[in-house]
Amino acid sequence: MATEVTIHTDGACLGNPGPGGYGVILDHQGRRRELSGGYALTTNNRMELLAAIVGLEALNRPCDVTLYSDSRYLVDAVSKGWAVKWRRNGWMRNKREAAVNPDLWERLLNLLEQHNAEFRWVRGHSGDPDNERCDALASAAARQGDLPADPGYRPGGFPLSREWTV
Image 1 (cartoon, rainbow, N blue to C red):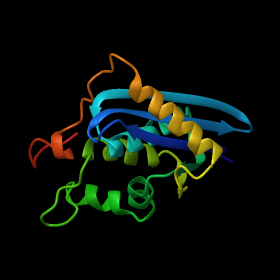
Image 2 (cartoon, helix red, strand yellow):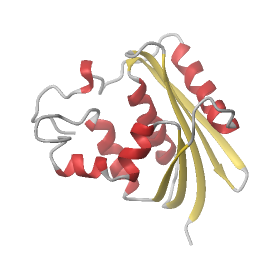
Image 3 (spheres, one colour):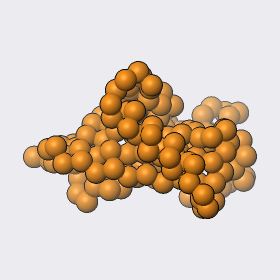
Image 4 (cartoon, rainbow, N blue to C red):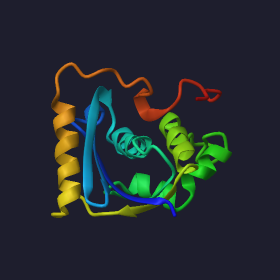
């Protein structure tokens, strides 16, 4: 039986784009670990994705994961299979629109192949203690001075060319 882990995540951006941060809480049998970080120029959606990635990357073996996020972008794209479809279609949402943030989606999908994960949406800023804590971690990270550049950020969220790969 795989280890059961609960992950709460949130991303924040001071302006969009702007300085951004992510916050993560991992919970395994009441043992909690908090993670956070940020970038000088990024987007809120990138930070929502990165929070999930950082949470899953912190696991050192395959786990049964329940991941909570207030990002419909993240939860719906995973739960409804959109991200898998975008990857299968060469990071295109449809025949004319490129998928945004393919670098992070690729990382996330690779991690999801290692874990049995269920993504659940939670309403943000509604009093959920773990979501509020993740928001505080993400916001504090976004306000740190001297944040590094987000290596995958592109204005508009698109890759440099349609042939771009990770």
